[in-house]
Length: 123
Image (cartoon, rainbow, N blue to C red):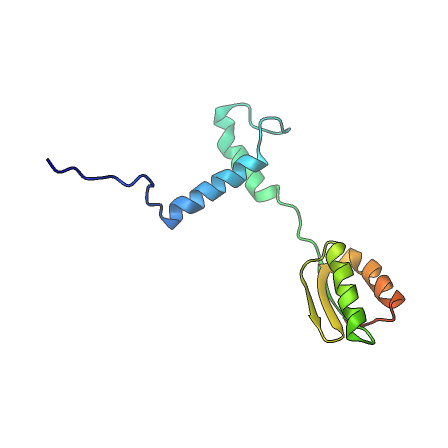
C-alpha cells in the first residue's frame, strides 16, 4: 500500500508569520508580573486595543552631524570612538564623519570633535 509522507514542517504563509511575530512581541510587552496586566479575560480585548495604541514611546528627535577633521587618520580615530560610545551607524569618507544621533546628545559629540580639531559642517 502506498503512503503519503507528510512534511514535518508546516508551510507558513506571510500572514501566519505576521501573526506569530505580533503575538511574540505582544507577549514580551505584557507579562503577568507587570502592572496593568488584565486580570479578567473579558477585559483583555479592550486592554490590548488601548495599550497597543497608547503604550508606544514617543519617537526621539534625531539630528545628523557632518564632522570634518584635518586629516583622515583623525577622522578614522573619531569614527572608532563613536562606535565605542554606542553609535554603530556612521559613515566615514576621507576626512569626514557623518553620524545620526538623538538631538540631546549632539553637544557631547560636538565637544569631543572640537577637542580633536574637528568642525561641524552641517546639522
